[in-house]
Amino acid sequence: MTADGLPPIANTAACRHPPQRCGHRPGPQSGPACRHFGTCGGCASQDIEYNLQAEAKKNRFKSLVRPLGIDQVEFTPAPDPWYYRNKIELSFAAPLLSIRHGNEFAIGFNDPLTLPSPSRGEGWGEGGNPLILGFKHKGKWFKVFDLEECRIFDERLGAVVGAIRSWAKQENLSPYNPKRQQGFLRYLVIRRAMNGSLLIMPVTTSSQQLPKNSLLATLNNILLCAPPIPSAPPPLCHSAALPHRLSLLWGIQDLASDTAQTQRFEIISGEPYLFEELLGRRFRYSINSFFQTNPRAFELLLKDIVDQASLIFPNSQTLKLSNAQAVLDLYCGVGTIGITLAERFGVNVLGIESAESSIEDARFNVGHGDTETRGYGDEKTEISASPRRRVAVSFLCARVEKVLPEMLQKEEFREGLVILDPPRSGLHPKVLKVLEEKPPKNLFYVSCNPPLTAQKELPRLSQIYKIVCAKAYDFFPQTEHFEAFFTLERKEKERVNVERPEP
Ligand SMILES: C[S@@+](CC[C@H](N)C(=O)[O-])C[C@H]1O[C@@H](n2cnc3c(N)ncnc32)[C@H](O)[C@@H]1O
Image 1 (tube, rainbow, N blue to C red):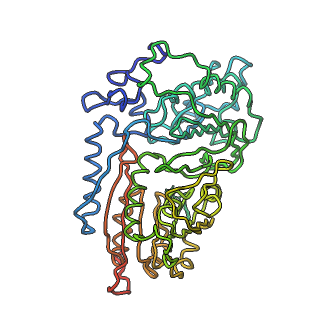
Image 2 (tube, protein in one colour):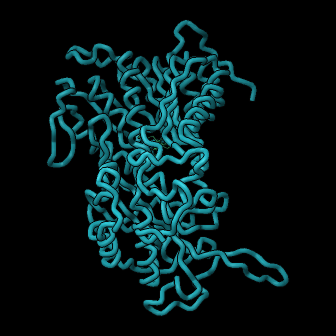
Image 3 (cartoon, rainbow, N blue to C red):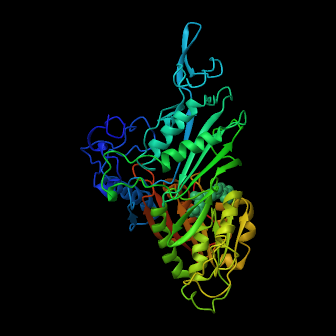
């Protein structure tokens, strides 16, 4: 065992501090960094040196956009290839058992409900019925492994998850059985801000009360009162700093669907949201709201969005800007892109988003629809960089495919800028159709699924729009995924009839 009580890890994995600080990077010869590599489906590329991962993604992006006639692409590597994520969702489960059915063996869930309940203090873990808390096994939705670390999330994760697992066993809480739809503990959602604040939410069924006080005491003990690791490395190398704030929620989810999203939650301690700073401006996001999972990488993309928008709104810092052009921020989340553009360029913005909690955060983030103030409760701050004029920034909770036809009737959006940032499933067919029929002058497409965008959507859109620039960003190091940003301009003198590609 190592000094901090963890089993030793082969080769470079022995260093448990962020490689960007220690310089301990796994290379092609050194093997994967995380002890769960191969079991966990999350970081399939971590045995490949980061530079090679970035090179491979750049080449992949080039080959995706070449058929669109794009030869020049920019690729921005991740600012930090490790410990970059701000959100994870773990599952509680009982282990799988081999169950005899007649003459055949079947694999099934160990069913905590048919086994005698362990006596208090004995715990599910000791009576031959252990409780597992971790990620799903690679390729096996039904099998969960005990998580001890995650090299792309937070260094404190192992301690936090270990403490919650022990607490659950101590309290004799049963894991949920998805097949029988019975049991108590379902998921553990953890979000963190880059300043170290944590938002932790166990998600359970409503079948019993959560032992809240003991959970809060356990977490406070781990996060605030834990003695320093005996072989503590020098301060600069030791980023497992005390959290600036711990918020603890209890989420309740009785639906059969396999989702940790819950509309019902109780606040046990703290507040149900976090703040993150992007380009020097703070944004609030709640437990159920979307926020880019790699904020430092997103900031680089946001800066490029601002640069590209400055080509559209060049004179916007003057007081004379007319309202002839406005921004339609589609799939706007908590308003990060739209609010940034409103404040930089003094341009009116309408954000559209289907998740109510994101819309609430977006409205909070914009303050009073006036770029001269920020809405941070008591902490209203003047924004010196913003133009001294009132700008209308508003948010609508709606599905984009429903409201876009009406929005694109409006001259200010048709002659202004439309931003698309859809989920991985891409654009709804109705959205694509209306973008063809009523094309806005400027279209920015932020894509977390570049293969789908480049192969299915841009071939259609490029009939109507010229693709002006194509950039990619590594938001997801150690995985094969990346983000892309395309800017498009309506082709003014070309035909209006749409040539649809062969299905
Ligand atoms: C990739 S996120 C982009 C968020 C935001 N632009 C940002 O950068 O933070 C996609 C967002 O679209 C929302 N969404 C998904 N389907 C939608 C739909 N049909 N209409 C409106 N919003 C939708 C999701 O809730 C999510 O917030």
